[in-house]
Length: 88
Image (cartoon, rainbow, N blue to C red; front, side, top):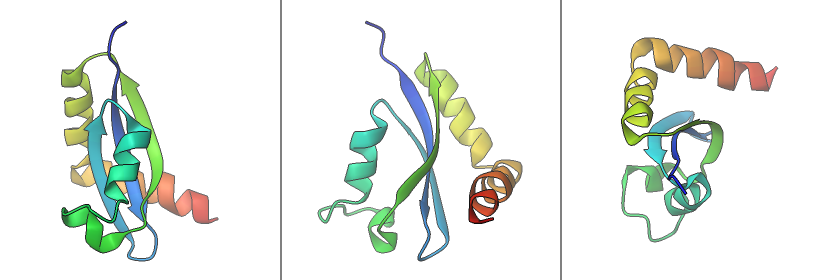
C-alpha cells in the first residue's frame, strides 16, 4: 500500500490564527497540535480545528502545495474561501 500525504490548514478561531503543514496522518497530527504536551508554536493558540486538507500521492507534491498555501495568495485563499465563507 502506498503512503498518502496530506497538506492541511488549521485554524484557531479564538486567536484568528492559521497554521499550514503536511503529514501522513491528519487526525493524529491535529491531536498532536492540540495536545497538552505540545511544546511548539501551536500550543499557545489551542484549540485548533482542521478546516481544510488535500491528499497527494507523493511527499514532494504535498510540500509544494504547503509552500503555495504559505504565500500571500495562499493565505488570501484560506481567509476568503475557507474562513470567511464558513462564517457567513
